[in-house]
Length: 276
Ligand code: KIV
Ligand code: NA
Image 1 (cartoon, helix red, strand yellow):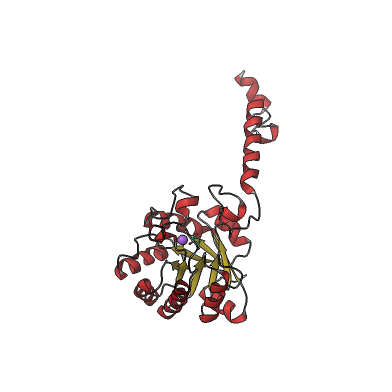
Image 2 (cartoon, rainbow, N blue to C red):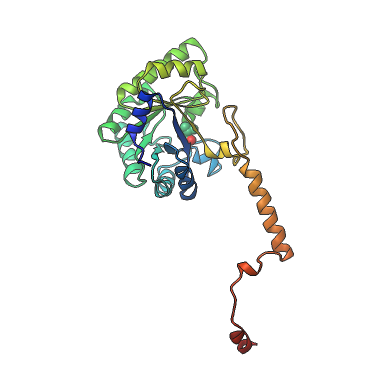
């Protein structure tokens, strides 16, 4: 296998091949996902919810992102590692955006960064790209704007909002983004956006007309039970399997069935004799 890069993304769209992306937040999971042959691993600020237990992504810090990005980067050999710029690490200024993007690359060892927003963050996208850091944009239901949206709601449903999203997608492409995540927008709109720009669109809750798909791995593996959005497909129920295994461990420890002889280190008879 060859190391994936931004060229993988560019070529995939040209060849009409679909791109695959999953989140990861730790070494072991990243290694497993990478070995499965995924194109890209996203260290999403969704880690605030699925790893840290917050109700939204707003409390996630640069230190959180760097900590988890370091772990993921150590586990990934082939996939393109993209790391999220957290809330207020890039909205405040172009300077903050470049500085913090640089930290995700330099300290976290990601190969690209992702940030949320359209026309309002184009100066940031442009400046980060000029610093030789590839940028993935993110439009639609951008979770860092949850308070402005008044909740986690599908975006782009009326004509004005739909037109605006098409314009935003063109703007982030013009600013230099190498791809754009489309989250929770109608499938037809996502398809239209995908046809309107030359960079790949990566959908989550945006239907089958995108150039690729991304999911939070806990969602698709049945490891996060707080809530499951409509767009998630559960490919496995690992959470209940873990519960069953843990219950068995507890009962075997209580009954004395674990550890058995094969899990135990022996002492030679000669030494035993001397000790008794
Ligand atoms: O943080 C995240 O996991 C994301 C994806 C859902 C696109 O931004
Ligand atoms: Na995110």
